Amino acid sequence: MRRTVIHATLLSMVMVLGCSDDSSKEKDSGTTTVDAAPLPDGYQKWPCEEEGKSCNAHDTCAIDAICKRDSNGDLFCIPTALQDCKDELECTDDICKGMGLCDNLPKAGFCALPVQVGGSDAGPGTTEIRCFKKDEANPTDPCQVCDPDTDPKKWSPANGGACDDGNACTKEDYCQNGVCKGVNYASQCADNFGCTDDLCDGKGGCLGNQLRSDYCLINGACYKDQENHPNGSCNICDVKKSQSAWTAITNTCMINNQCYNDQAKHPSGDCAICDPAKSTTAWSTTGNGCLISDTCYKTGDKDSIQCSECDPTKSMTAWTALAGLCKIDGQCYAQGDKHTGGCAECDTAASSTSWTVKGSYCLIQDVCKNPQDQDSIQCAECDPTKDKYDWTPLSGKCKIAGQCYADQAKDTTGCLQCVYSTNPTSWTPVTGASSQAYDFESGAATGWTLTGTDAAVKWQVSTLKPGAGTYSLYYGDPSAKNFEGSGANSGTATMPAITLTAGKKAGISFSLYMDTESSTSYDTLKIYVGSTVVWEKDKTVTVTKKAWQEVTIDLSSYAGQSVTIKFEFDTQDSVANTGEGVFVDDITIYHNC
Image 1 (cartoon, rainbow, N blue to C red):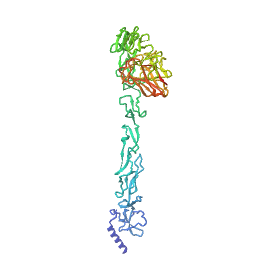
Image 2 (spheres, rainbow, N blue to C red):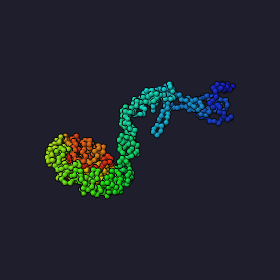
Image 3 (spheres, one colour):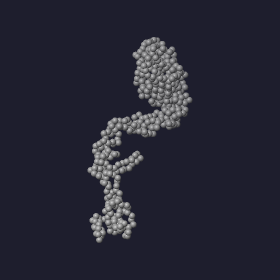
């Protein structure tokens, strides 16, 4: 009877406590065949009434409890399994909530919070729960802290404290409501180029501006890799070749700021083509007509004054004078026609492009002069026996750069002097001074480097117009007696390097004749020492057109250095290039004075 009372008492307890989590699950009647999981030692078993039926084990960790008989034949509610709610964290209380659910409640003063671990560029990694004490920061984000009073299972936003917002161009980074913020100073390091990364040190300093690998930065502008030159030229940005300069496109010609493909015809006809094998900067003539002033003419075409014609057998780049006619200063004259001054005439046997002086006269700057007529400064005279086309200095006088000097007179530097017997039209270095002279009378510019972008128009030694003697250094086409070529053209003449004596005066003196445009923007002539311009046409000194004059440049600031001097001529365009060109003679570099 005692056992029955216990069961009744237990039954009343079951009614008070309620049913098991799985009480709604009915089992088959009869003896159960469900095998219970091993229970921990000391596990409290609760009696039950109906074998094989679901029962209440009075344990929220119990799973699928069933009423079974033990070895003594007594009925007890035995769980099929026990819910394992342990999270292996020392800071949590592990609680079974029933229905297979768990809760891990952080203990007082602790938080159980997620942390990102194992991340890389390949992926974000994984998240695991770790224990943190009050006010401890997230190891991956210092602006998140443990605040068990707010929420022990969620990170709380921090205010204040150092952090790193990941932006190198901010400084004094601090946490503000869970977000890392800093004072942005990127503008201090910016170079305003969209193709560079402006590098900062995160402390208020700059580390420079790094050009991105897929861009070029050329002349202060950004260009994407393989982007064409904006003006349509034959250049592209090719970062594999250069990120600071344009890369020429192969098998093209860049002529008059326009790009043409190999074998492309001239816009005005088939007298010229783009032939990169011959020139990448000028038209190459084909022989099918003439290319004159950048226009194609057919064989036999006449110029506007009917004085010359296109004759490719004689010149493909200039008009050929018609038989018995002279084309002088844009006018047409027949054989024997006289100059207005009467001292010269058209003589095609001598020249079809200039007046030929007849008799004992001089034609100086297109004005007829009688023998012994003197110039305006009484320094030179007309002496047909010596020169019919320029003034001849009077005995004992030098006419240099438009000024008259007595024999042995020195210039303002004291390094040069007038030596009538040696050269009455140019300065001569004083006795004791070191010098290097070039008069080109050997017929060559020995040691010089001469270039030109056009096959015929370039720097070369010529007999066309010597300053003195037979030869001079000339930029132009000797056969055409102009510098037209096949379009815009340029070239350089670079003399051998020379070392100037330290602590002494130095300079260069030369004779110059220019038959070009007088504009400072076109037909430019510049003289360089290394990469520095030391003289320019009509800027450093006014150049008199179609007359020989003396030019002197002070080089004393280069004393003690080895210098390389270069003459550079550039038409800049293809217009008005019918003059004879540029002549340089009697060059003297002096120093040690």
